[in-house]
Image (cartoon, rainbow, N blue to C red; front, side, top):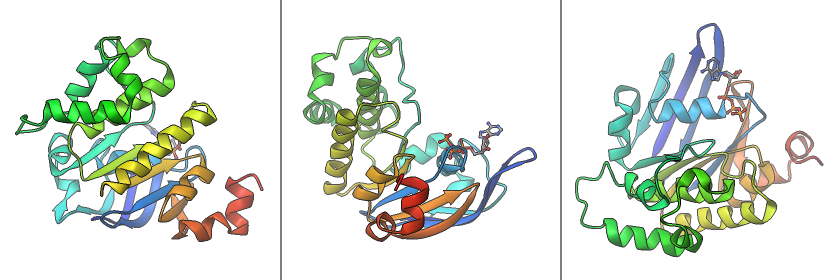
Length: 234
Ligand code: ATP
């Protein structure tokens, strides 16, 4: 379980995240929605140790993440699929995926896990020798997700997986997120595509200029008048 309490994060004088509390229970999909600059990415970066917190606490399965280095956090079973994918452009698809297994002590499952990623993303299998930098945006998103899967996570943080993708690819990516969830993986999903994010999630939080302004069951938020007006173009 991931439990964030009273978290505040600043970049110098800019308060990006202001006293937010949220939790993600084991096996849940929780979405964090909000406009550009609301603080969604900052929240994920603070969870995975890439940005320091100003105050508050982040506990993950009994571990204090604010006292844990980023490279240790991945060994606790938390994987991060970053905004913009950040694939290793000069490495092949397969090398990128293998990098995801880098933190594992027991590497006896790597071949089996690669096969599994390729059954999730057959397109990556076809392109396994291609340099990742030459892939389309959707294919790079698949590499980023596959790379996260290779670390055998129990929890995946996904930052804007739908960004820049065609509606068809967005559907495909969300279908995979559901599949991971069906396997028991916990997901914290950051999205500007509120409709998709609320359709798939159990619960959701709305972040506005660094503060959580609404939270609840995703199906309730999907039908909420304020959410519909602000985020669903209704
Ligand atoms: P987006 O969807 O555009 O990525 P977001 O909700 O993820 O938006 P953040 O990227 O977390 O929002 O940004 C929150 C606020 O913090 C914004 O005002 C942004 O300009 C600021 N910010 C983000 N990163 C930095 C940084 N490295 N230095 C200074 N300010 C930053």
